[in-house]
Amino acid sequence: MDQNFCTAVFWHGGEKIDLHGLEPEAVRCLSVTGERKVDVSFLQAYPNLEELLLMEKCEGVEVLSELKQLRHLTLWLSAPVFWENIHLPKLRYLHLRGEKNGDVTPLLSGITFLHLEEMRKIEDISPLLMPADHLQKLYLQSLPAVQTLPNLGQFQNLYAMKLYELHKLNDLTALSHSNLHYFAASLIADKLSAGRLAEAVMAIPNLKGAALERVDRSGRRYGQIQKAFSDAGKSALLCEEISNLTTWLSL
Image (cartoon, rainbow, N blue to C red; front, side, top):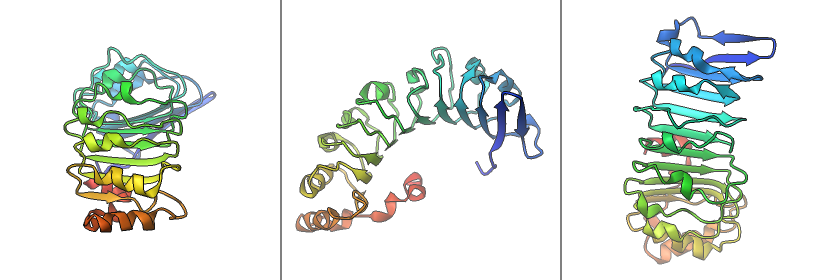
């Protein structure tokens, strides 16, 4: 999608919808934000939406089932909604911010890319991932309570993982049972030694590239990680360019 985001902003005194001169049926990307609770049933006028961002409080989300072209959904809600009867057959990319989006597991059956962000209290993401049988890429960002990775072996198609700000992470053994090809990590596992971190990543059976230079802001562990990869004859697997989000998304 090369269309710029159109916006629908609702506040207590009114609303402002900017479609950049497009008719609703021509809009492909839309951001909906509100200071007050927003009834999103108006989205039935946008049948060709492919990417949608919903923020703050929403109701009437049943209308999403009418968006037959929707492939990319971002949720950052301040009050949960009920997703049980929402069917989005083309949805492949789901980005969840925060912990107040409700039970989103009904949305996960066809997801290939999942991005979890700013979930401050969640300790175990395994139940959330359970229905994502077709998962290919997983991005975990700012999950400060998570200490261990879920069982990655259950995701046969998962080939790329990116971790950012998982400071309490102390168990990476799940990596050795994964089908990952690419692994990128920044600001993770503060108390895990460079040696153990390197061993865990090198244990990925089908690893093709790893980006680990930014596991610390100071870079204090990276020199030792490089040495561990070198001693194992695996220096070629350190591919720092994949830590760039644009590059990682293109893998």
